[in-house]
Amino acid sequence: MYAVIDIGSNTIRLKTYEYRDGNLINIFDKKEFAGLAGYVDKLNNLSEEGILKCLEVLREYKTCLNNVKVDKLLIFATASIRNVNNTKEIVDRIKEELNLTVVVLSGAEEAMYDFKGSKIKYNLPDGLMIDIGGGSSELLFFKDNKVIYKTSLPIGSLNIYNKCIDEILPNKKELEAIKIIVKKYLKEMPKIEDKYDNVCGIGGTIRAALKMKNYLFPNTDNLVLTYNDIDKMIEIAKDDSYRWQVAILKIIPERVFTFTPGLMILKTIMKYYKCKQVYVSKYGVREGYLLANIEEEK
Image 1 (cartoon, rainbow, N blue to C red):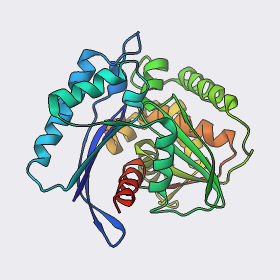
Image 2 (image 1 turned 90 degrees about the horizontal axis):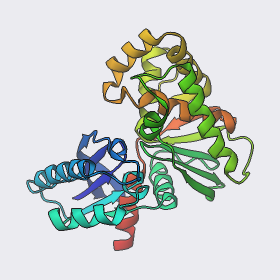
Image 3 (image 1 turned 45 degrees about the vertical axis):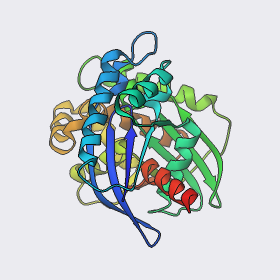
Image 4 (image 1 turned 30 degrees about the horizontal axis):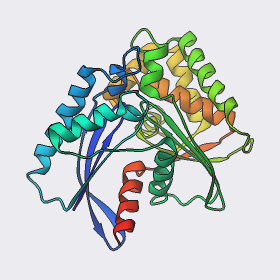
């Protein structure tokens, strides 16, 4: 059995798998909303409080794994540790205090593992892959099943919340500010193509968006998110804050702070590239990273 720990900006997640006949079978998983992006100080360091929070969760996961037979444990970090100045200090502390080795993925590596994981569920030949995390958003463009460009934008659902939003839920002005920031980063990217009909969506924000869409619009396709679905949800967030708040607390209460800004990031990217719909994958960077390691072993 394999175990994978993913240290993200919003969550730290443990998942265990068995690998049978070329397939990954999820055995169990645990998730902690650590919110590490909220512990970044003015010097762009993860604070001592944030490091201790990370250590606390990893210690709990290590204890949990002591009770099961795991053949190999893989631990990686994304924007939570990649985008701060004291990356080495954090990795060293985890090694010294818990004897755990953490691999910090670059944005390009994260996007590639996302892409590899997404292929488990959807094998779209052409399109755009989007993964909106807590501290970054990965975009990967592909044609004829080949990657033509990949990038990591330093904006995610949690750090954009901390930057732009004063209350629990964003108002119209704050949503507009998020859109402006996202478009600024998109305009700085090299010109790929103007239009991508199909998106492969990865990560907690996009999976939460599908749950919310199915709750608000139950008589639509419950496996796909259209741009129109996302646009209508943003309009509810703008014009009917009470209905929106009730829906979030009922369907995805753990994302009460981060869901709306994450959804606005998704809408802005889709509008910029004229995307029509999102195929939501339950597989992503964790599965892609594990598969790559298994293939390397073999």
